[in-house]
Amino acid sequence: MARARRFKTELSLIVVVIANNSEMRAIYGKKGFEDILKSLSSTIDSTIRNIDSKGLIDIETFAMILPGTPLEGAGVVQDKLNRSLERLTVDFDGKKKVIKLRVRIGKANFNDDTEDSLVFYDRAMENSKYDMG
Image 1 (cartoon, one colour):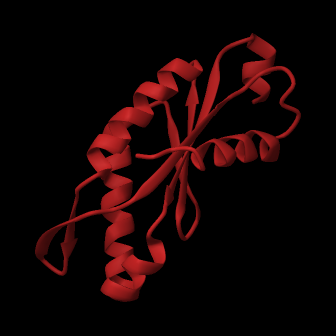
Image 2 (image 1 turned 90 degrees about the horizontal axis):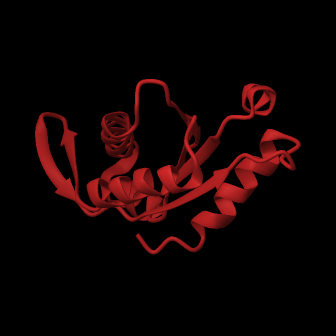
């Protein structure tokens, strides 16, 4: 955020929330849910650029920082993620299985009014509530 503010460049944030996480944990257990997170992480890695950063915020939420990306560009990434996460291939102890993972994806763009990272994150999370996948 400091770099975007200083150099007046675009910066977007995307959050991916697993909407059916409790269902996935009940069906696949703790180890299975970890396998789902690994597959989700891999899919995100193959969708975002090398300069983008990804992290697991909590057990059901990934966040990605997209430097140099306007909100429209984040929308393109959101669409790609929605398509690729609709049917996720997961390796459960050597057995590949395609599962239906429901996610909500939200995005926010940095602007000069963004004072801290929590406000930025909250805007993206609020936006995720309106994502229908």
